[in-house]
Image 1 (spheres, rainbow over the protein chains, first blue to last red):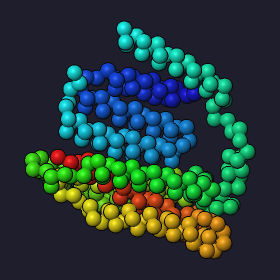
Image 2 (cartoon, rainbow over the protein chains, first blue to last red; image 1 turned 90 degrees about the vertical axis):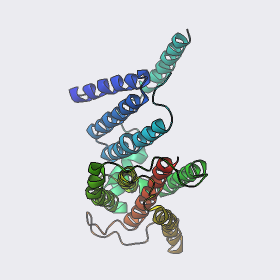
Image 3 (cartoon, rainbow over the protein chains, first blue to last red; image 1 turned 135 degrees about the vertical axis):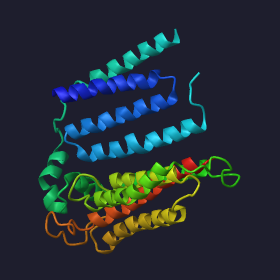
Image 4 (cartoon, one colour; image 1 turned 180 degrees about the vertical axis):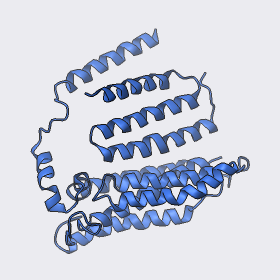
Length: 79
Length: 226
């Protein structure tokens, strides 16, 4: 495992824990998108560009937009 | 107390996964079928991208199943979020000038990139699913810039149905030509050329249009729901 991969995995862990801890749901969605984006970078480094493209477009792009729309139409803060 | 129990449960499940996964050497190919695809994929299917040769040629039937699952999911979203009392009253405010102008400039290029990705699915990384997702993100930009307009709703459902039909029709043509369902009945052509790899580009264009229309429809339904 190279240094870059280790750093990516570390940031992914931080973002994943942040996702579960944020009370502000918009912040949680953004942290979740960061997990997806870092995962797609990791896929690219692991020689899987096909998966990286799908992860970047669907995980970081479309899913985030759907979550943001859902949060906007309900409540922004978790009790 | 509940959090402590949950934490212990997560640790137990994680230890179980680790015990299983640690026995598998990372990245080692243990199966003959993977070696066979890597060795013979380019020669047998004509697709320079081996991932595509597996997804569309060797495992074409599974891909048809995947497309069907996505279709059913999109239909379910449409059924659940069907606008009950007509169009939404409020929230018709348009986006700012910057978003509107930016989306006008960017939209054609995003669509072009998506079309490039699925047209070159047999040559470069990417394919129908990735290109379709990029196209859907272009439509997402339109929905953000002009909420409540339902951009391209009728066209997208027609494109979705026709491309799904095209996928199955190519498969049945394979039976007609006697090479089996979703078999290749066209010449393989020169390697690395755009028009090569038999039916793979046709199937990937159909998948790209279908996935793009479906995901754009899902996003549209979500955004237009009051």
